[in-house]
Length: 126
Image (cartoon, rainbow, N blue to C red; front, side, top):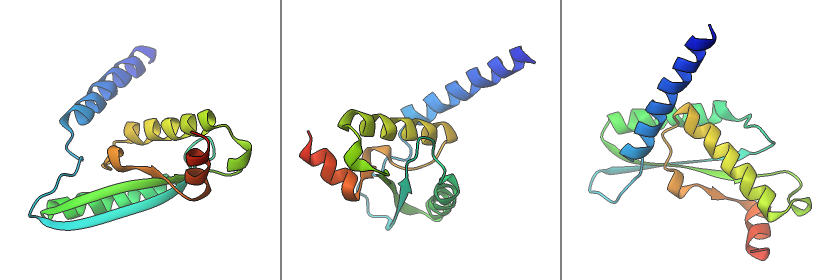
């Protein structure tokens, strides 16, 4: 059983690397019909809002099948921002993006952003 899990992880890592290298979900300007989806998630250590992201991902993939040029981005926010260091905030965002990539979400990670008090905190402390 243990070897099977290791094999599955190796296959998963290969597929994730292929997705990353293909840059298929990175949006560029084109003449196609445009569609934008932006969701906000509340980071609390581990991402708990994957159902929201999953619904947005389904919509984005459907629109792409219908020949839309889809921009799917995510905004991050955290609790108790004033009590956190800039490094901790950046680490939490990076952990969340890693989890999202491992799920194969089709968002354009170059365009994800922090929102609200998190953005203000980062701007004031960098």
